[in-house]
Length: 449
Image (cartoon, rainbow, N blue to C red; front, top):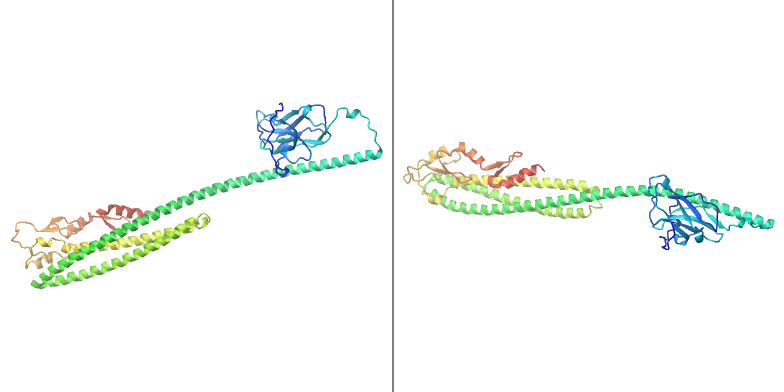
């Protein structure tokens, strides 16, 4: 391989950061003839992979950086890196480019990044006819030369020991570095999984919080509708009370029924007040939920540094969700009871009173006996029979307002008919109107959470 004018890749890497044990130089002579070509033999270790821009340079002993090379040659890439024969390589330096002085030099293998991967023992270049020259020296000069040679040999041995120590240290550092890299990769994978888990948990909390807000808004809307309905019922009750007062003047029995209805109306008002107090409690619970939401957001920001608190806070949020769910179910049960009470009240006064003329009749007691749900009989059964003697008396369903014949719609058929108008939860036996099918499905779904 011929030398090219292109400069090799070098760097200012110090000796402490080099890896001298990855390339081993073989058969290095102590002296080379200055006028002849020099062949450098080297071996590639199994952990080292050569690259296209690697090179071997001749450096004067005592060099500090790879820029201080005297001459260099590009290495030849082996065809098969797994073959044993390709591990043994050689490169030849032309005599024209070799040093002409008697300083100590060494071979160094430098990769394309400018890092030293191997270094040989020191050697010298001597003239070809040096052995034919007769040198006459005194005994003192001989002793001084021997002493100098001994010092050089001692220094050479120290350099060899230092090289072996550095090679061993380099191997240990490489093994430790490989171990640290594997640990770093493992920690990175764990960190990535934790970040994904935190992100999923955060999304789940945000979704759950949004659902709770929607449920809260829905309950608020239902409560407002209920208040409007209550006001309407109160207005209707006021009108009916006036009608009842007129009826009381003509019949003492009607007066007793009116007292009974007033008593029930007072109970209904008390329940309405209780409902409003419960609504205030719900609003307080919503405020507490907002405060807990703010606390949860703050906890999410600190979640990266406090992963060990994740399970505990998740359990606390689940407990809070269960408490709110139970509170919601309790409120729904109370609303159900109130609706049923209203339905029962409407069953007493659900007829169109303005279109029906009333008269006092002795058949009131008989009607009261036929309808055991009324203590003093049906107060609106005094319809003039002479107005429609051939028609069947009609009765309305208190829930769906459907018309039924009085001799057909009795209490034995009332319960099956009402059951068709409600959806019962298979878990807690809670009832929902068929118009509230979506609420019923959401309620059943909450049991599976």
